[in-house]
Image 1: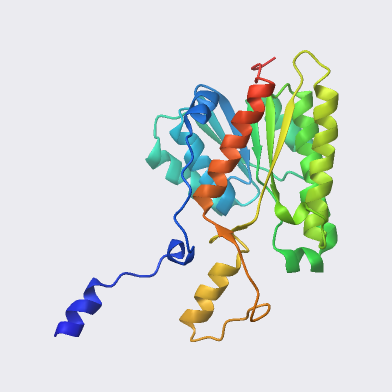
Image 2 (image 1 turned 90 degrees about the vertical axis):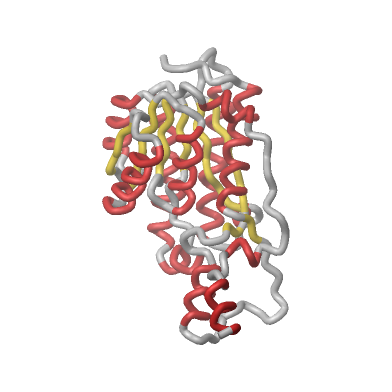
Length: 267
């Protein structure tokens, strides 16, 4: 009976339990002042990173929040969650592929966002390695299409969600994200010469616990199935951050970047 009582008190292990440290808390007051009252668009809004970005942005009181994704189900799912979280927040569901320039331009012309967070990407390294053309089309060309549309339609700032794999890239995924970064860096230099040019910010982070394509959900499934765990090497070290930590960094970086070149608003 004692063991049965103890078993009832046990809870399921959460991924944060294996982090090995206390999550880092950032002071987000500057983020609140940056996002409050702004019209914001998030690409890849239904993904693991994009959906958490949507949740956090919605808490800072934007004037309007547009959710863009190529997955009908994921877009519907995050929109339903947002309707429960902030029912009065004006929002739009935009079913679109970032690789379609005509569609992207039409949507930005209609929405006129002041800030765009670009989270849409193919990020599973082995999958992109097997399909490099798709990885480049989404990660590099798709980012170029979104960036060009931001410039064309007078978006104040575009924040690109990148990866540490873009540092001296050894994979197609990393190389495609590095290309995206370089294109946005070049655009930022050009736009800085304009009175009301678009500001581009790229934020890199590493392994995010439980993001799509992360190794942790795979390990969880392998443990549930009784093993074994498919580790790269017995002595490999992996360093993780929580989704919340990753998105706090994204929002903080975007706000800090805007401090050097303030978002001027809609044209």
